[in-house]
Length: 149
Image (cartoon, rainbow, N blue to C red; front, side):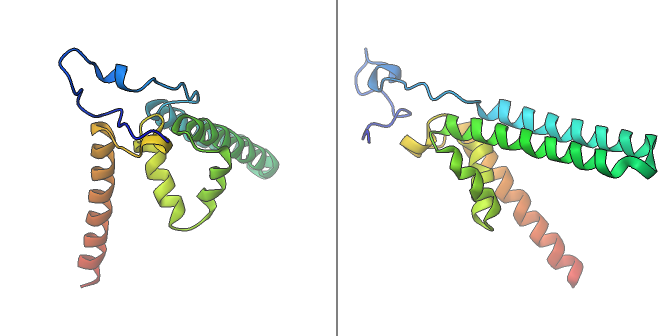
């Protein structure tokens, strides 16, 4: 494992940050593409489910199940591609089935930059996403507490 931080400031005037560490191509999809494809998958799945149920309510069960299964398969492919981009194994997709781990993994999928498994350093957009996520979670907890009073 490399001890150099790809996000560190260059040590000399003529050296650039890209010269410090040779960039490894991880493949997969980036965080913005992951967010977009996930949104598109959910949107198309919901539209198709609604259209099928509205067109033939009595015979919709089998078709709705098929649309749901295709949506789950597409989601798994999207997550595996994002995990590859982070430098993790595709088997980490099973972590989405484990409570608490699924929350941490979901935040990493949206916030972490390419190669996060190697350098474990969030860049500024990643820190903003994590901050917004934690802030919204704390706001939701506060609303629930205030509603219970």
